[in-house]
Length: 371
Ligand SMILES: *Cc1c(COP(=O)(O)O)cnc(C)c1O
Image (cartoon, protein in one colour):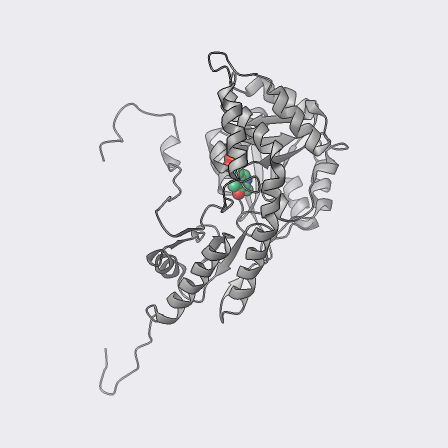
């Protein structure tokens, strides 16, 4: 360990672990909820041509006007209430830079996306992690509890990662109505796979920010593009915290190309949902396996054997899933991949559960053994 010598970082930094998500070589990478197939060749040809025409000697459009206009059109939302950044993770960071920070606090309903508490720490916002019990649905009681804590920011993830369930719009609206000075961040990274969007609430509640991404249903995780649909006032505040020209001309061009080919991405959704439902059905049929119903493109489950062993057993067979035991005891999360990838996953899981080492055997008492 030579890394931890001088210079000394700011207080608390070294209590934050480095962000790592294993990107191991394997036959089926089902750990990060990406779309399992890339966009078709026609999209890539269009993108290459568009990028060829970008004047890279110039700074990009700092207002990202073309991309924001296209998104405003897609969602029938006012241009002034649309803002884009490098992945929705940067959107979340900018929202916390504007509405969180030192002396302020953000509520999140656990188990949920790990980035919320992490980004709170990085922006010196105090994270308040309220816990929901299975089936992890918000209710009037949770809403009242959150409001009583006078938060500055409230995160609601719907469909929720890693549990897959959606949150009722009535509760989101109640949060927005009862805490008009707080920002209600509704993370809809998985909304194209299922659930009802909170977007119609924005017109009446300027303190709701609906966060979307190109990383999942748009099949563009590699491009790092996210956006927020909110009121013009929130976007004005984001203009104050953003870095100059934060979204490169290459990213803006890629986002526009993706929107031109949106039908290609949307055409993949049905197949992905079908694989998700197939995973739920297959896991439900396994004795002792707990499966959480999902509206997203992944499924959370508790296998009937120790999760760490199952995770390793799957990896030994070329299938990488996400270990979620830190947020839900003994739980693993599997992304809905292609039919072939899910074939592999289910075959590997059956093998692990039937031929893996038996669960801790209880030694049979033997006569004369007094230890
Ligand atoms: C994957 C995911 C995102 C996407 O983040 P990007 O930075 O846009 O890639 C956002 N929110 C949740 C809950 C996610 O699971």
